[in-house]
Image (cartoon, rainbow, N blue to C red; front, side, top):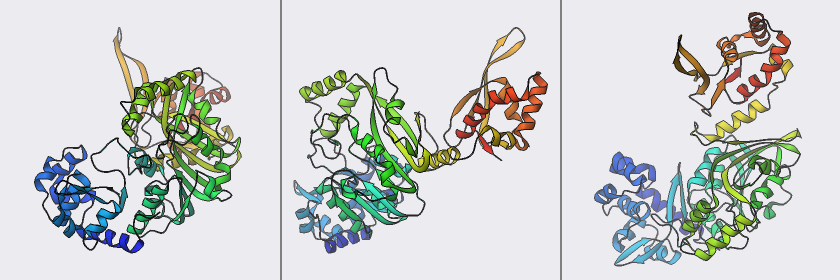
Length: 481
C-alpha cells in the first residue's frame, strides 16, 4: 500500500518547504502571542492574521483545521496538484472549499503526516494512524542520540521515531502490523529525505533473529480485552502482555552493550507492588533496567480516557465490560511510563521508580546518568578510598518550629535544582558529613573524624553510612571527585 508514489511525495515535500510552513515558524510570522495561544487551542490570533498566501493556507489547513478556497489551496500546494491532494486524502472537500484530510505536525526539522487532523478527537477509523502526541514526545525525549550502527523502531506508526533515529543511526528498521501506518511512514521518509527499512508484521516477528544497537518502541500498549480492533492502541495481548513481551525479548534483541527505550502501561494489582510485576518481566541475567512510572489512573478514569480517545465515550456496555474485567483481575490502577534497558553481562538489575514531578529534560540524559552510576564500582572498599563532592545545584533545606530555646530544626533535606530534581531527607550526622564533601578529603578520613567527634568506631559508622552514600551517589546528590 502506498499513499503517494515517491515522485509525488517529493513534490508534496517541496511544496511544504517552499511555503515555509513549520510549527516553529508561527511565532516569527504571526507573533509570539498568537503562536502561544494556538498551542493552547485558541486560534483567534492566527485566524485574524492568516491570508491566502501559501504560509497562511498551510497554517489554516494544518494548524487551525479550517477550510480554504480551492484556488488558494492549489496555489499553496504547487507543484503538488490539488486533484492529487484530493485523490490521496491529503485534502477533502468541505463546503465551497477544501479542508485537511490528514494531519501535519513537526518535530525539530522533520515534517510528519498522519491521520491526526488538527482539532479533532475521537470518531477514528479502526486503522487510524496517530501523529505526534504526548507519548511519542516522551519517547523522543527519552531516546539517546549518540551515534549507532543499527536502530529499530517497533510499532512505528507514522514513522516519527524512525525518522529521528535516522539522524544518528547508520541503518534504521521500522516495523508495524498496520499497512496504513507503514504507508504513512514511507511517505514521511520520502518527504524528509530519509531511508528506512520498513517491515510489516506483529511486534517482534518481522525482525526475529536480528539484533540492534538501539531499539525504541511506542507499541499499542492500552490494556483492554484482546481483539478490540483499534490497531493504534490495542496490542491483542492479555492485560499488559505487550510490555512483558518486549521486556522478555530484550536480551535476544539487543547487541552487546545495546540500549532499548519503550513506553508501556502496567497493572497495579491488589496485594502486589507494581514494581514486582514489572521486574518479573525481564530475564534473570543480561540487562540493566530502569522503569519510570509517570502517572497512574484508576480503572474508571482509564476507561473513560481511552473511550474518549476513540470516540466511544457513549458506549456504556463496552465500559461496563471493560471495568468488569478490571474487577475480576483485582486491578486497582494502571500505570504509565517508560522503561530503559541496557544490555550487560551478569545478573540483571531492575530498578522501578515512580517519578511524578517535573525533571530536567531531556529524559535521555537522566537515563544515561542513571545507567552510568549504576555501572560504576560503588563497593564499600572503593568508596572508602574515594573522595566525594556535592553535586552542583544541591542545597540543604530545613524546617523548624519555635521552641523554648528558639528555633528547633525538626527536619532537613537535600534538594536538587538540576537533573532529576529529587528531594532526600537526611539526619544531622549526614549533614555534617556532606558539609565536608568538597572533593578533597577521602571518605575514610571524613568517617574517622566523625567517629572521633561522636565517640564511635569508624568501621561500624561506615557500615551504617555506606548504603546511604551509595544511594546519594546513585540519585545524583554526590559525585565521585
